[in-house]
Image: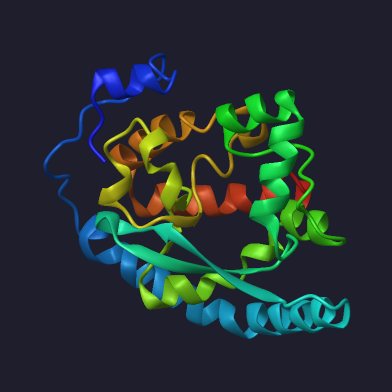
Length: 227
C-alpha cells in the first residue's frame, strides 16, 4: 500500500501530508503490550458486551432482519479478514447504493470524496441509532480477541478502497474498533484524511495514547456522533 506522488495526485488527495514510513518503532507496548491489553480488556468487557449484543441481535431478528453480517476488510500486513457487525443496512445494500449514486450526482460526488453518505438510503429502521451509538460495532470485540483487529487502530478499510488510500502506515497495524479518525470530526473529513490520522497514531502509539482514545471514544458514543 505504498503511495507515490502520482497515485495521490490521481485520487485528488495531494494536499494530504503523509510522512514516509519508517522501518521500525521500538517499544515493548508496540510489540507485545498492545496485544496483551486488547485481550485483557475484551475479557473484562465480555460480561457486559455479550448480553447487549445478544439483546440487540434478538431485537433485529424480531424486526425480520438477519442480525449479523460479515464484511471483508483489509487487516495487518494487507491480510483480508471478515469483520463482524450488527446489521444496519438492507440486504441488497450494494445495489441500492449503486442506483442511488447513478441518479444523484451530488451523492456521487460526496461518496467519491468521503466514501460515506450523510443521508444513506441503505440504512434500515433502527440502523441509524445503532450506527450513531456505535453499538453496531460491538461484535468486533470478537475480531479483537481473534487478533484480526485491535481496540485502537486505523479505521478498517474495505478491500475496494485500497487504491484510494494515500498512506504507508495502515498495513503496519491492526485496524481498530476505535482510533484517532473515529474520535475526530469524521463526519466532516474526507476519506484520504484518514491517512494523516493513521500516520500520527503510528508515531505516537503507546498505552497512554490508546487509553486516551478509548476515553474519548466514550464521549463520542455518549454524544451519538458515530457514523
